[in-house]
Length: 638
Image (cartoon, rainbow, N blue to C red):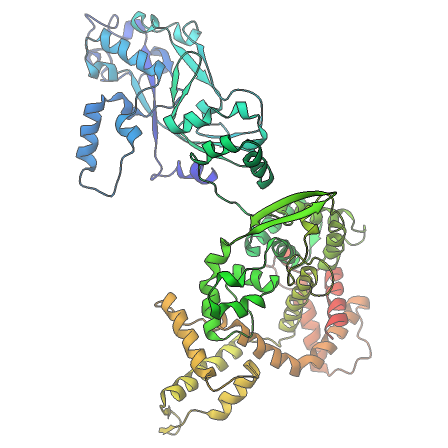
């Protein structure tokens, strides 16, 4: 609805409605009908639409928001549309636009004026004021949400005695006119959404069976034509109950609607933004440490993921799917990142299977509680931790903070998540049995452990970067050099040496050393596989330079790890020195050179955002959050 509202305010989204305008008697040429003087002589205009308000006796708006094109007789309208759009076979004009009629009140006013003007359409159109139609959720103009309730969605009522209608000319005022109001009326020319439709009594929405098929609703005094898109929401449990208890009615509705599964978010990049933007605004005065929104979103997504059924996929992919972990699947959905250890062919097949994985149907997940079975859904994202629940977890973590440390860190977040996982009665999905790591919430190999390890990975990289031990350009340059040599090796070509001006063989020693750091089990076809993955990527990204770090995240990760192993002692000393500075602002007795101390001091300043005026404090550590991060890194990694 927000998109439609914004679109209606653009040039491409222009829509129109109209109102009836009736001038005062002295400005209408002595009355409507015989002997009226020409309008142009009286007003200098051929229409009443631009009259000043003081000379307008009555202006009748139309709550149904009829399209002005309905004012044209159907034959003339169809001829006009054919003339305007006849040369564009791809543009199909809807039946409603070609054949639609004015609403009951507008039809009576139109016919009364047409009779008074002896069939002169031009004089009838003098009373028409066309205006732009804007859709608005706030003012319920074409965009309406209906909450579960036990009242009718539309009604009609007489308006002839209303003050606004008392100034109409006799030819119009003599008609019995009716007004309409209600959710159906407000949503005309837009979208009507029934929130939790199946929580309403059935008798209050069964009229939709005929309404959606005939585009009409019978009210007390008139037949209301509908120009509306109907949508509705219902949770899976209500839908299953409706299907089981009212099977006949369900089949009737099923033939008139499209069921669209709307799972919880499965991309933790998107969910992270929700926590960054919404919760960050709510927790004013509370610092949220780096990576908290990301790790919370990752954990939430992993609770919703289901183990894919390898039998539904090609044989060459089954082995990879059997080893897939919740973390692997979350990364695959969010970044298209394939797990380590896959061949180039398996990686290509896995990426190609992602659209099918999104829509894979599973057996209904069922938990048994107190002798009763509770279905949770048959698609991925039908259960798990909701965004609303995880917002509350974050708020609860903020409420438990000590007065002297107003900062939410990842370890404190996990303390709150463990308390949340104890509430199994209100969150039945927590009772599901684990399947190869999926739905395993606590313990070794659980999604909680995987999310915590991911935070350690991110923090480790953050600290190494601050210490100047990460240089992405270095890995990229090495890999480009490797691809250059491997390509010539596979083709059996020699390389031109720009220094000596002679041809030489590809550097076998260099290639083997780099292959050892990328894959210790690299076989004779390793180089061909590498080039094959680049070729596959180029097919889907024409005219783009190969992004090696995105094509081979597993190999780049291993190259980093190999380099990090060589620098582990340096990082350990740097962490210890920064912890000493954070504790008492004094250097301890660590055996560090002056250069190492200076590097650690600058790393500390970088992690705290010191000396960077353009840095958002929300993206940086406080002294407390950094100290806790370094303690956890020292405990688990160093």
